Length: 87
Image: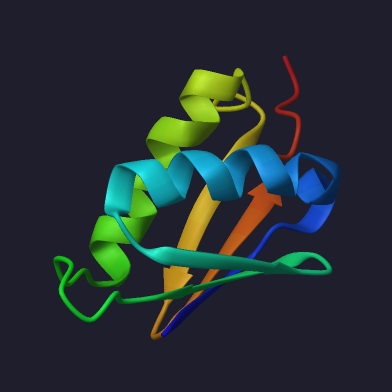
C-alpha cells in the first residue's frame, strides 16, 4: 500500500486517480487529499519509484509539471508546489 498526499491538487484528485489507475493497473482510492494505492491480486506489482514516475507523467499530462514536484519517502509520496525562483 502506497499513499500519495495531493496537497494543493486536491480538487484534481479524481482525474489523477483515474489516470494512475489506468497506467498502473492498481486500485486507487481517494480519501480527502490522499490517494491510497494497493495492488490488485492478479495484477502487476509496483513500488514507490514506479508510482513516482507515473505520477510525474500524470502531472505533465495535466500541465502541472513545471509548478509541482513529486517527493517520495518510504511508502508515502507528496506533491509539493515549487518555490518561485528569483530572477
